[in-house]
Length: 169
Image (cartoon, rainbow, N blue to C red):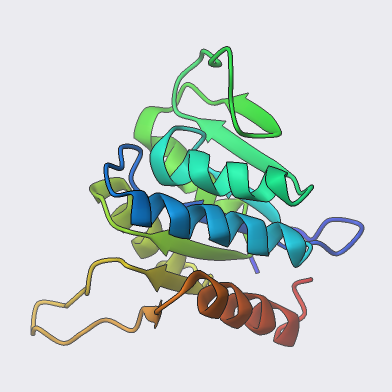
C-alpha cells in the first residue's frame, strides 16, 4: 500500500470524477459512494472541486464521516462540502497527491483528470473500482483490467472488502 493507515485503521479512499457534471444520476451515484464509504469507516479524499468530488464529500459528511479535498490552486472557496480543504498550488499535478494519499480509488464517470488518476492508481497497484465510467482499452484493443461496478453499493462493498482482505484498514 502506498498510503499509511491512520492510527484507528481507517482506509482513505479517493473518489474521483468530473468537476462539472450535468447528469444528476452521476451526482447521485457519487453522493451514495461518499455516504457508503463514510458509513463503512473510510475517509473520503477528492480533488476538492465540484461535480463528482463535491457530491462524494456531501455524501460522506451526511453520514457523519470525514472528507478531505486537495485543491489544485492556492485559494479555498468560501463554502465547501468537504470537512477539510488543502490547497496545493499544483494544478492537475495534485491528481498524484490524491492517488498517493489513498488505499483505494473509486472513479465515478469519466474525464481526462479521472483517467490520469485511474492510470496512476493502476500503476501503483492501488485497487480501482469504476462506476458509470469509460471502458478502457490498450493499443491492441484489449479491455484493461479496471474493476467495474454497476452500483454505488456494489462498488463500495467490493473495494472495502478488498482493502480489508489485504490488511490496509
